[in-house]
Image 1 (cartoon, rainbow, N blue to C red):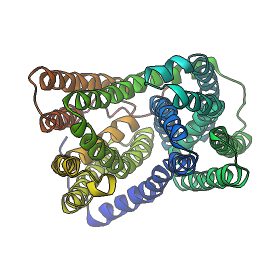
Image 2: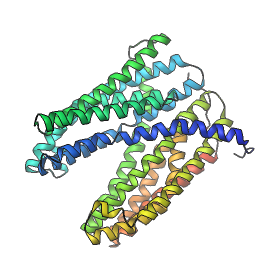
Image 3: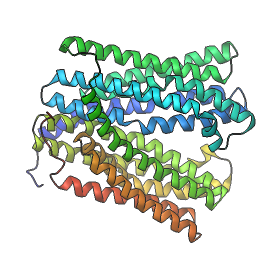
Image 4: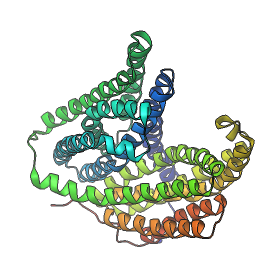
Length: 444
């Protein structure tokens, strides 16, 4: 929808709001992987079987984290919309119900995963001592899974309140707590891989406790009940189902690329993994803009101001594109060096350089896609996002199948990955250009 060009003071004010939310969000996103990095660094000194077990168990846990990220995303948009409408009481009520949903889902998933832990580890190829260590780490870590989901709900509540600073502080402090506990238990007291998992569990429950305290304060201020509300939880579950489908389609598409890379060749798979890890790292920076979008767009639509919502959305797209261009330049300039940080194999490094040029070329598109994703999540346009992701995933799956059947190389697989992102760009941009997502007010 065309509109007048905003004045320079308005643009600067919008930029300040976006950066106020995006920069602390970026810090929190970077801090979260420190849990796994700390575990890897410390457990690596216990031995190769322990490190292999950690790798398998962490893969399962990270998939769980990714699939249930809807607890943060869905809560952010809903709370921001209520904040914009001036209804802090219902926002606090939303937070309470999100925590209840997180506790129920987290407990059920933890129990089921614990029962199915042996088949899950076996599915990933765990055998012998690696399998034993993976089971120990996974089963202990699952004790913290409900806390992880409660933390996601708490993060979503604070983001919806336009506060990304406190989640950043919690992420940093709990990551440091995890590291200190690991050093004491494993290095100081000579405990095994189970102590590493226990350290993470303690850190996760500590984070969850902090968010529960903050939500409890809001409940007291606004006179909200702590009792579960079945209808509110049901609405959250419906919204969560759409985001779950979106995330599952996203993870499935990315898993397909790794599976196809493995079929192409060992060197190709190694190079793919290097480039893909860098792709994922860059995604953290781009996701910070998306988080700002979730919070700001939800707020403006809750305040029944679609003009401000679209104006902020356009500025976030500018930021996403700009960040993508900068990251593309950084990756292109460092592509000759980066692979050698990960491998000493000349053939793998050469392939990785080639794939990093693909990575660099995709970043401007990725930046816009991430921004649009955040905008539409903030608007609550979740059903569209779910099926748009399924459709884009089908495009990638078809291309990947062609790569396998035609015996094509790794470059063609990455072309499919880029086509996947372009498909997402086209569908999300088409949606953004219309008005269907500009639904104002709050649900009754």
